[in-house]
Length: 452
Image (cartoon, one colour):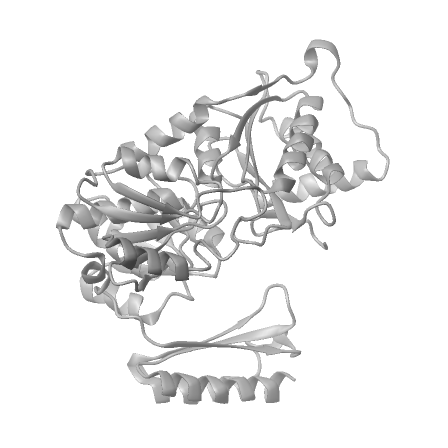
């Protein structure tokens, strides 16, 4: 698997890449590293452990719990709950560590382990590196220092976690959702129970699809990566809108009453205006990545809201928000972070706040989302090239300059080396789809010529 920790924890095919032994070892390593860092000093440590419904989550959860308890950490097992619920409960319960078992929107055979620090925040990179190093050291034979007797951790199910998280979600709403019929696609995932209940308690009439997880059907033709069923259900039931989550419910995409998709950029735009109206948009700034549609940038400029852009990845969005105290950020994919209420993307919270805006204004989501026009966007992956020379190639710089002059103010070019593969991603936006395709094709050829 190379470096174990990626941008969102450790992921791989469960029982092949990610084994029970690895889950146990990483958990013991995390406990020892946090103890060394002083996190547990002066008290008996506690961890919150949750999972999505994947079948492999059952044995991986058992391994994680065993590892933590064997290292002297008391464990609160919250069962099947979304990733943002585990993050919230880690903070709300004053736990020293949170662990979520999920591979998010990945197919069912995959799984993953994500650690949260005290307060429900992502572990610092240096702590992840240290955990990985300690895990490797002990995997090859170095003995652990193990507690005995009363020093071992105790394990109990924390069933109150469901209601605690539910109260948090409903309490974050500025107004109720009475009168709205909403279709929820839960991707047969971690929010299959808590999300519909939150919308009902907020006053909405709820229709659910993809809310019958059996351990094998997570993300299977449903959820935020497969919107066809949701689009059809919204139209069939005459709903005001539809909300789609992914397997661990840290994402939210939406569908308006006509069955048209409302993506993460549009959701950010709607929430930015709503938050500014109630003086909750600190510094009148929203944070997004460089992959956000140019139409989003133009809309924010027109509305007088400052846009700060980061590298691709919700971790970079969150870092920028925390560093400067911004309240709202996210990605086109539907990771939306509302920092006053969450330390990570929370798909259920995002959907609730989007629905609350519809209810508060009395305007259809289609009309609210029209605050921005999505410009046509073409993405071409150019494989087998020297991606390290993207920024230094004079030939490529000339080609990019010509493309930018052709597109003018109504278009944009982005060349981005892949973080995991030997390829360069060429993204072009333009007011016209044919122009976007033409420019993207020429730039892809230029990448092959300059870097091949």
